[in-house]
Length: 132
Image (cartoon, rainbow, N blue to C red; front, top):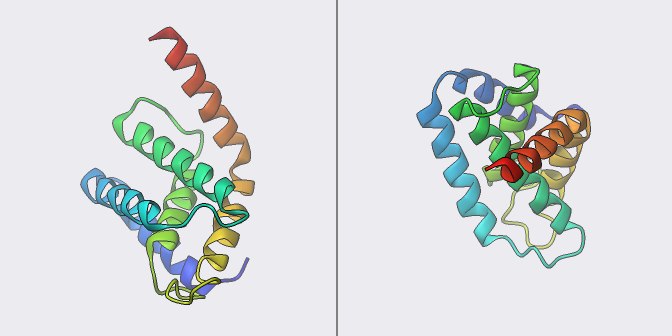
């Protein structure tokens, strides 16, 4: 997928590796934006689930509780979160009705590429919560 705004988000995400405080701030901004989105619009519930999952995976990776198989996947997931929280991307979020369309496409694309890692993380979450 060719999107110069996402490419910038990837570069920013790569620069954030090793900076847990800044990543934590990105996750806080993600949570804040998610609280402002109308999730009742058709097709957005899957995006909500995926973003919450990405946030949990990034946080677990930051704390060392979960080890990703690939740093590249971490960068891509973090970039998808950055893209989502940025109001000025390919289709600005200010455009009512269609502002999240590009965000949904990017998140779906990244999550499709990271599907195996995300399933492994969900399995790890289930196993960990049972053993606690």
